[in-house]
Image 1 (cartoon, rainbow, N blue to C red):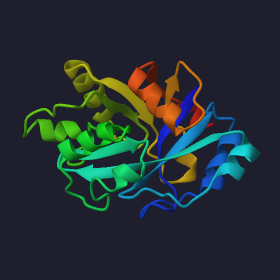
Image 2: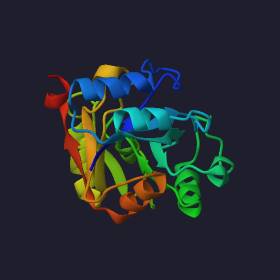
Image 3: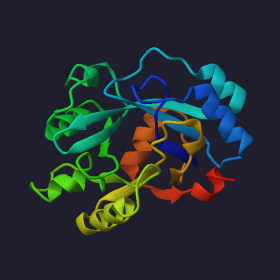
Length: 213
């Protein structure tokens, strides 16, 4: 099962894609995606209901969040009420230890995204500060990366023994599916995704050629 674990819709301040248009694009371009995860910036969207779109397009549509920390941006899957009340999702200076600890305590899964990027990537901070305990998985393929960023992410992930996943980081419709994550098992809901991420039976994949057909 292939999921794009990192996407943004118009719910994000810099997102320009409607979820319905993502679904239409996936089907029109025959992308090999089984679903997507909406990781809106500095928030958790607990209002939007995409079940009709799931039924219409036969896609799994899940919701997560991208939060900002002192070690860069972190994706959080499995957000629940307890986690929302554990730290301020709107802040740009959350302590990464607080985010990682809260996610594990509340049954969620947190992992740094685009870690090879300057300023907002985990490994940029490793150059100036010590590595972070509690990090075990990072996004090694990101559809928005410039040349060299994913290479750095892959090399550093291997150096530290981190597992790697992929996501498009799409903010416009045509970039959906540039990178994604292939799971060894079927996933039906957010709890299943969290379980699969903890289980580690997945790999990052690049679908850029298929995405630009």
